[in-house]
Length: 317
Image (tube, rainbow, N blue to C red; front, side, top):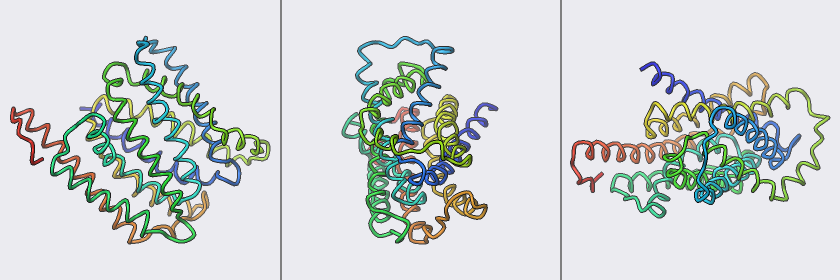
Protein backbone atom coordinates (compact mmCIF):
# COMPACT_ATOMS: atom_id res chain seq x y z
CA UNK A 1 0.00 0.00 0.00
CA UNK A 2 2.86 2.39 0.81
CA UNK A 3 4.36 1.82 -2.64
CA UNK A 4 0.98 2.42 -4.30
CA UNK A 5 0.69 5.75 -2.46
CA UNK A 6 4.25 6.62 -3.49
CA UNK A 7 3.36 5.71 -7.08
CA UNK A 8 0.51 8.24 -7.00
CA UNK A 9 2.87 10.88 -5.63
CA UNK A 10 5.34 9.99 -8.39
CA UNK A 11 2.68 10.40 -11.09
CA UNK A 12 1.55 13.74 -9.74
CA UNK A 13 5.16 14.91 -9.37
CA UNK A 14 6.11 14.00 -12.92
CA UNK A 15 3.07 15.81 -14.28
CA UNK A 16 4.05 18.85 -12.22
CA UNK A 17 7.53 18.63 -13.74
CA UNK A 18 6.02 18.42 -17.23
CA UNK A 19 3.68 21.33 -16.55
CA UNK A 20 6.48 23.63 -15.41
CA UNK A 21 8.64 22.39 -18.29
CA UNK A 22 6.32 23.89 -20.91
CA UNK A 23 6.83 27.37 -19.47
CA UNK A 24 10.52 27.20 -18.53
CA UNK A 25 11.56 25.71 -21.88
CA UNK A 26 9.53 28.41 -23.64
CA UNK A 27 11.60 30.98 -21.71
CA UNK A 28 14.79 29.74 -23.36
CA UNK A 29 13.56 29.64 -26.96
CA UNK A 30 14.29 31.28 -29.31
CA UNK A 31 16.15 34.19 -27.68
CA UNK A 32 18.97 32.04 -26.31
CA UNK A 33 18.68 28.63 -27.89
CA UNK A 34 16.92 27.33 -30.98
CA UNK A 35 14.51 24.42 -30.42
CA UNK A 36 16.67 21.93 -32.31
CA UNK A 37 19.81 22.79 -30.33
CA UNK A 38 17.74 22.44 -27.16
CA UNK A 39 16.70 18.96 -28.29
CA UNK A 40 20.34 18.07 -28.91
CA UNK A 41 21.40 19.05 -25.39
CA UNK A 42 18.39 17.32 -23.86
CA UNK A 43 18.68 14.08 -25.82
CA UNK A 44 22.47 13.70 -25.59
CA UNK A 45 22.61 14.32 -21.84
CA UNK A 46 19.64 12.07 -21.10
CA UNK A 47 21.01 9.29 -23.33
CA UNK A 48 24.36 9.34 -21.52
CA UNK A 49 22.62 9.21 -18.12
CA UNK A 50 20.45 6.26 -19.13
CA UNK A 51 23.44 4.42 -20.62
CA UNK A 52 25.35 4.90 -17.35
CA UNK A 53 22.46 3.53 -15.25
CA UNK A 54 21.91 0.67 -17.70
CA UNK A 55 25.57 -0.40 -17.62
CA UNK A 56 25.83 -0.14 -13.83
CA UNK A 57 22.51 -1.68 -12.73
CA UNK A 58 20.77 -3.47 -15.62
CA UNK A 59 23.05 -5.00 -18.28
CA UNK A 60 20.11 -6.82 -19.85
CA UNK A 61 20.81 -8.48 -23.20
CA UNK A 62 18.55 -7.61 -26.12
CA UNK A 63 17.71 -10.01 -28.92
CA UNK A 64 19.02 -8.81 -32.29
CA UNK A 65 15.67 -9.40 -33.94
CA UNK A 66 14.18 -6.74 -31.62
CA UNK A 67 16.66 -4.03 -32.67
CA UNK A 68 14.57 -2.88 -35.68
CA UNK A 69 11.51 -2.36 -33.44
CA UNK A 70 13.69 -0.55 -30.89
CA UNK A 71 14.93 1.69 -33.71
CA UNK A 72 11.36 2.46 -34.79
CA UNK A 73 10.26 3.19 -31.20
CA UNK A 74 13.33 5.41 -30.81
CA UNK A 75 12.34 7.29 -33.95
CA UNK A 76 8.76 7.96 -32.84
CA UNK A 77 9.25 8.07 -29.06
CA UNK A 78 12.37 10.23 -28.97
CA UNK A 79 13.27 11.87 -32.30
CA UNK A 80 9.87 12.75 -33.77
CA UNK A 81 8.36 13.32 -30.35
CA UNK A 82 10.98 15.83 -29.20
CA UNK A 83 11.58 17.56 -32.54
CA UNK A 84 7.91 18.42 -32.99
CA UNK A 85 7.38 19.21 -29.31
CA UNK A 86 10.12 21.83 -29.03
CA UNK A 87 9.48 23.35 -32.46
CA UNK A 88 5.77 23.51 -31.64
CA UNK A 89 6.39 24.99 -28.17
CA UNK A 90 8.54 27.72 -29.71
CA UNK A 91 5.56 28.85 -31.82
CA UNK A 92 2.46 28.36 -29.68
CA UNK A 93 1.44 29.01 -26.07
CA UNK A 94 2.29 26.58 -23.23
CA UNK A 95 -1.45 26.52 -22.45
CA UNK A 96 -2.26 24.98 -25.83
CA UNK A 97 0.63 22.54 -25.45
CA UNK A 98 -0.74 21.24 -22.14
CA UNK A 99 -4.26 20.86 -23.52
CA UNK A 100 -3.34 19.22 -26.84
CA UNK A 101 -1.11 16.68 -25.08
CA UNK A 102 -4.18 15.30 -23.29
CA UNK A 103 -5.39 13.96 -26.64
CA UNK A 104 -2.68 11.25 -26.56
CA UNK A 105 -4.97 8.55 -25.03
CA UNK A 106 -7.51 9.24 -27.77
CA UNK A 107 -4.86 8.81 -30.45
CA UNK A 108 -3.66 5.60 -28.80
CA UNK A 109 -7.16 4.09 -29.14
CA UNK A 110 -7.32 4.97 -32.84
CA UNK A 111 -3.79 3.74 -33.54
CA UNK A 112 -4.35 0.52 -31.59
CA UNK A 113 -7.34 -0.19 -33.83
CA UNK A 114 -5.28 0.13 -37.02
CA UNK A 115 -1.94 -1.28 -35.80
CA UNK A 116 -2.90 -3.87 -33.19
CA UNK A 117 -6.43 -4.52 -34.51
CA UNK A 118 -7.84 -3.80 -31.06
CA UNK A 119 -11.62 -3.43 -30.94
CA UNK A 120 -13.19 0.02 -30.56
CA UNK A 121 -16.35 -0.28 -28.47
CA UNK A 122 -19.32 2.08 -28.63
CA UNK A 123 -18.22 3.91 -25.48
CA UNK A 124 -14.69 4.32 -26.83
CA UNK A 125 -16.03 5.54 -30.16
CA UNK A 126 -18.11 8.21 -28.40
CA UNK A 127 -15.05 9.19 -26.34
CA UNK A 128 -12.89 9.48 -29.46
CA UNK A 129 -15.55 11.60 -31.18
CA UNK A 130 -16.07 14.01 -28.27
CA UNK A 131 -12.34 14.34 -27.59
CA UNK A 132 -11.54 14.87 -31.27
CA UNK A 133 -14.15 17.65 -31.55
CA UNK A 134 -12.60 19.36 -28.53
CA UNK A 135 -9.06 19.09 -29.95
CA UNK A 136 -10.10 20.32 -33.41
CA UNK A 137 -12.08 23.22 -31.93
CA UNK A 138 -9.15 24.22 -29.73
CA UNK A 139 -6.71 24.42 -32.62
CA UNK A 140 -9.11 26.11 -35.08
CA UNK A 141 -11.57 28.21 -33.07
CA UNK A 142 -9.87 28.77 -29.70
CA UNK A 143 -6.86 30.78 -30.85
CA UNK A 144 -5.73 33.80 -28.80
CA UNK A 145 -3.96 36.34 -31.09
CA UNK A 146 -0.42 37.07 -29.96
CA UNK A 147 -0.08 33.80 -28.07
CA UNK A 148 -1.19 30.87 -30.23
CA UNK A 149 -0.03 29.57 -33.58
CA UNK A 150 -1.89 27.13 -35.86
CA UNK A 151 1.44 25.77 -37.08
CA UNK A 152 2.68 25.39 -33.51
CA UNK A 153 -0.54 23.62 -32.51
CA UNK A 154 -0.13 21.28 -35.51
CA UNK A 155 3.44 20.46 -34.44
CA UNK A 156 2.26 19.66 -30.90
CA UNK A 157 -0.49 17.45 -32.31
CA UNK A 158 2.08 15.59 -34.45
CA UNK A 159 4.18 15.26 -31.31
CA UNK A 160 1.20 13.70 -29.48
CA UNK A 161 0.54 11.45 -32.51
CA UNK A 162 4.16 10.25 -32.66
CA UNK A 163 4.12 9.52 -28.93
CA UNK A 164 0.84 7.66 -29.37
CA UNK A 165 2.44 5.51 -32.09
CA UNK A 166 5.35 4.89 -29.73
CA UNK A 167 3.06 3.76 -26.90
CA UNK A 168 1.32 1.28 -29.20
CA UNK A 169 4.35 -0.31 -30.87
CA UNK A 170 6.50 -0.38 -27.71
CA UNK A 171 4.02 -2.63 -25.83
CA UNK A 172 5.61 -5.96 -26.88
CA UNK A 173 9.07 -4.68 -25.91
CA UNK A 174 7.94 -3.44 -22.50
CA UNK A 175 6.48 -6.87 -21.72
CA UNK A 176 9.66 -8.64 -22.85
CA UNK A 177 12.38 -6.43 -21.33
CA UNK A 178 12.84 -4.18 -18.32
CA UNK A 179 11.46 -0.66 -18.97
CA UNK A 180 14.88 0.97 -18.44
CA UNK A 181 16.42 -1.34 -21.05
CA UNK A 182 13.82 -0.32 -23.63
CA UNK A 183 14.12 3.39 -22.81
CA UNK A 184 17.94 3.29 -22.99
CA UNK A 185 17.88 1.70 -26.44
CA UNK A 186 15.12 4.10 -27.52
CA UNK A 187 17.30 7.08 -26.63
CA UNK A 188 20.39 5.58 -28.29
CA UNK A 189 18.51 5.14 -31.57
CA UNK A 190 16.60 8.40 -31.09
CA UNK A 191 19.72 10.54 -30.71
CA UNK A 192 21.05 8.97 -33.91
CA UNK A 193 17.95 10.15 -35.81
CA UNK A 194 18.11 13.60 -34.18
CA UNK A 195 21.73 14.07 -35.27
CA UNK A 196 20.64 13.46 -38.87
CA UNK A 197 18.36 16.52 -38.80
CA UNK A 198 20.19 19.56 -40.32
CA UNK A 199 18.29 22.03 -38.13
CA UNK A 200 20.16 20.73 -35.10
CA UNK A 201 23.52 21.78 -36.45
CA UNK A 202 22.34 25.19 -37.69
CA UNK A 203 20.81 25.97 -34.28
CA UNK A 204 23.98 24.84 -32.49
CA UNK A 205 26.17 27.03 -34.70
CA UNK A 206 24.04 30.07 -33.87
CA UNK A 207 23.94 29.50 -30.10
CA UNK A 208 26.23 31.76 -28.04
CA UNK A 209 26.61 29.60 -24.95
CA UNK A 210 29.16 31.92 -23.31
CA UNK A 211 26.56 34.71 -23.18
CA UNK A 212 23.86 32.66 -21.43
CA UNK A 213 22.93 34.13 -18.02
CA UNK A 214 22.80 31.76 -15.05
CA UNK A 215 19.00 31.71 -15.02
CA UNK A 216 18.96 30.33 -18.58
CA UNK A 217 21.38 27.55 -17.63
CA UNK A 218 19.13 26.73 -14.67
CA UNK A 219 16.12 26.45 -16.97
CA UNK A 220 18.06 24.24 -19.40
CA UNK A 221 19.20 22.06 -16.50
CA UNK A 222 15.63 21.76 -15.27
CA UNK A 223 14.36 20.65 -18.69
CA UNK A 224 17.15 18.07 -19.09
CA UNK A 225 17.28 16.59 -15.60
CA UNK A 226 13.88 17.41 -14.13
CA UNK A 227 11.48 17.19 -17.06
CA UNK A 228 13.28 14.42 -18.96
CA UNK A 229 15.54 12.15 -16.92
CA UNK A 230 13.67 12.35 -13.60
CA UNK A 231 10.20 12.06 -15.16
CA UNK A 232 11.18 8.85 -16.98
CA UNK A 233 12.46 7.35 -13.70
CA UNK A 234 9.31 8.41 -11.83
CA UNK A 235 7.13 6.89 -14.54
CA UNK A 236 9.06 3.60 -14.47
CA UNK A 237 8.51 3.40 -10.71
CA UNK A 238 4.82 4.31 -10.97
CA UNK A 239 3.85 1.79 -13.65
CA UNK A 240 5.23 -1.02 -11.49
CA UNK A 241 2.65 -0.33 -8.77
CA UNK A 242 -0.45 1.06 -10.51
CA UNK A 243 -2.37 0.08 -13.64
CA UNK A 244 -1.74 1.80 -17.01
CA UNK A 245 -5.24 3.34 -16.87
CA UNK A 246 -4.47 4.96 -13.51
CA UNK A 247 -1.11 6.18 -14.79
CA UNK A 248 -2.70 7.57 -17.96
CA UNK A 249 -5.44 9.37 -16.04
CA UNK A 250 -2.90 11.75 -14.53
CA UNK A 251 -2.56 13.40 -17.92
CA UNK A 252 -5.77 15.25 -16.93
CA UNK A 253 -3.71 17.31 -14.48
CA UNK A 254 -1.29 18.77 -17.01
CA UNK A 255 -3.43 21.58 -18.49
CA UNK A 256 -4.57 22.70 -15.04
CA UNK A 257 -0.99 22.60 -13.71
CA UNK A 258 0.25 24.58 -16.71
CA UNK A 259 -2.40 27.23 -16.03
CA UNK A 260 -1.43 27.39 -12.34
CA UNK A 261 2.27 27.65 -13.19
CA UNK A 262 1.48 30.28 -15.83
CA UNK A 263 -0.01 32.58 -13.18
CA UNK A 264 2.67 31.82 -10.55
CA UNK A 265 5.68 32.16 -12.83
CA UNK A 266 4.34 35.39 -14.33
CA UNK A 267 3.77 36.77 -10.80
CA UNK A 268 7.35 36.02 -9.71
CA UNK A 269 8.78 37.12 -13.06
CA UNK A 270 10.35 33.76 -13.83
CA UNK A 271 8.86 33.57 -17.32
CA UNK A 272 7.04 35.72 -19.84
CA UNK A 273 3.36 36.13 -18.99
CA UNK A 274 1.03 33.82 -20.92
CA UNK A 275 -1.99 34.57 -18.75
CA UNK A 276 -3.67 36.17 -21.76
CA UNK A 277 -3.63 32.80 -23.51
CA UNK A 278 -6.08 31.39 -20.94
CA UNK A 279 -9.73 31.77 -21.91
CA UNK A 280 -13.08 30.26 -20.97
CA UNK A 281 -13.39 28.98 -24.53
CA UNK A 282 -10.14 27.01 -24.19
CA UNK A 283 -11.23 25.61 -20.84
CA UNK A 284 -14.48 24.41 -22.45
CA UNK A 285 -12.58 22.63 -25.24
CA UNK A 286 -10.21 21.19 -22.65
CA UNK A 287 -13.17 19.74 -20.75
CA UNK A 288 -14.43 18.13 -23.97
CA UNK A 289 -11.07 16.39 -24.40
CA UNK A 290 -11.18 15.35 -20.75
CA UNK A 291 -14.66 13.87 -21.25
CA UNK A 292 -13.47 11.93 -24.29
CA UNK A 293 -10.49 10.48 -22.43
CA UNK A 294 -12.72 9.65 -19.44
CA UNK A 295 -15.16 7.70 -21.64
CA UNK A 296 -12.28 5.77 -23.18
CA UNK A 297 -10.81 4.99 -19.74
CA UNK A 298 -14.26 3.97 -18.47
CA UNK A 299 -14.74 1.60 -21.39
CA UNK A 300 -11.34 0.01 -20.76
CA UNK A 301 -12.16 -0.45 -17.07
CA UNK A 302 -15.54 -2.06 -17.81
CA UNK A 303 -13.99 -4.38 -20.39
CA UNK A 304 -11.40 -5.60 -17.90
CA UNK A 305 -14.05 -6.03 -15.23
CA UNK A 306 -16.20 -8.17 -17.53
CA UNK A 307 -13.25 -10.28 -18.61
CA UNK A 308 -12.31 -10.86 -14.97
CA UNK A 309 -15.87 -12.06 -14.28
CA UNK A 310 -15.82 -14.37 -17.31
CA UNK A 311 -18.25 -12.36 -19.44
CA UNK A 312 -16.88 -12.14 -22.98
CA UNK A 313 -19.66 -9.90 -24.32
CA UNK A 314 -18.28 -6.37 -24.10
CA UNK A 315 -19.65 -5.08 -27.41
CA UNK A 316 -21.52 -2.21 -25.73
CA UNK A 317 -18.51 -1.00 -23.73
